[in-house]
View (tube, rainbow, N blue to C red):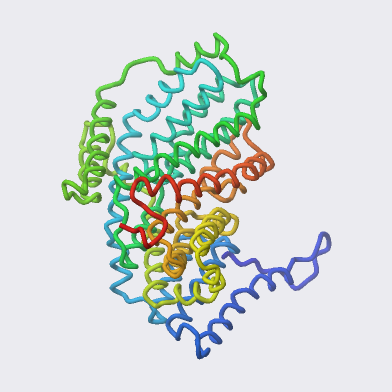
Length: 493
């Protein structure tokens, strides 16, 4: 973190520098270091390697929460400390950097670059929205259009950026109706975050969860099974958020039929036909998604399908995308952060640190007998829903939670795959603070455009959090078992 040094001479005016507050802030890492030493010496502790891993893990969480250091930089330093402590092997770190999930994301980003360069995304989005006959229909159609992007565009921040031009058009059309614009500014990031669970590539956290399951000895969830589990939740939660935002932000007398002039403007923006580059980009995208979905049958690795699609998307003159430009637009920080957090999760699992911590913290749950699985799933859901208040990065939340969720679930007789998927789905709710997610921050302050306030965001979160909790409980006990993902280990396939 950037250090600020103050002169020893008192300032002639204004308050004195907050030196005491800064020193108290650094009390946490000192306490963590002392606690790590005591834990390593404890006779019933996790051992030297486990204690070191927990200490480094706690310091990383503190740095993510309390400092302005880059998430990726913190994860890198954590991995280096783990190497020094012997909790992580050099080969394990480099394996994480070469993990197929990293190459899956690289290919997916390059495919998305071709979709963006062709203009297909904006064209389809505006065509869908232009079919609206009322403001309510407009909100719902935009919600469905945003949900579709989860299958093509990796990372929620990329999808939010892709939706920004469409929002800008709608903000101009409804410039005279401020509450509609404010509602749309809250709708776009909310749906982008909630609908990400529909696709394996919808968020980096999903790939983190899959890799941590594999590290723990469980089969990762393939693209098609993830789609079957996540799409119904993505649609229902997004539609519920849409209705709540409509009721909170748009007055009842403004939700009705669109004025003729407004509808004419929408149709004008959506006019024209698909170009040949759009058709080619759409065909390649469809082929890639089908390859992902049929991977378990054909045996094709998802990363290979993504790289093949990337090669076609960036072929000169085919979609308008150039590989050099697409590579520059690929967020290297996200890829590196994902690799480092995978290594951090591997260390927590392999050293037994996660299992020891869970046994210590949640031992009383086991005393509940037959009720322990239900309480376990409810606790996992509640903690995962609230985690965004402390840890801003979605991938970091999964890195922190999943290594703890897996042994906790096993200990209480809960299917660890169902528990991990539940936690990952719940962690998609991050709407309380503007700093809790990049899409929310992006739409919270746009120049010359009215957007939602922090109070609007909190009011939405207060109502939506319990609704999301109930929805997740219904899915984990009723819906997902119908697709073969049972919550209890005794019923695990």
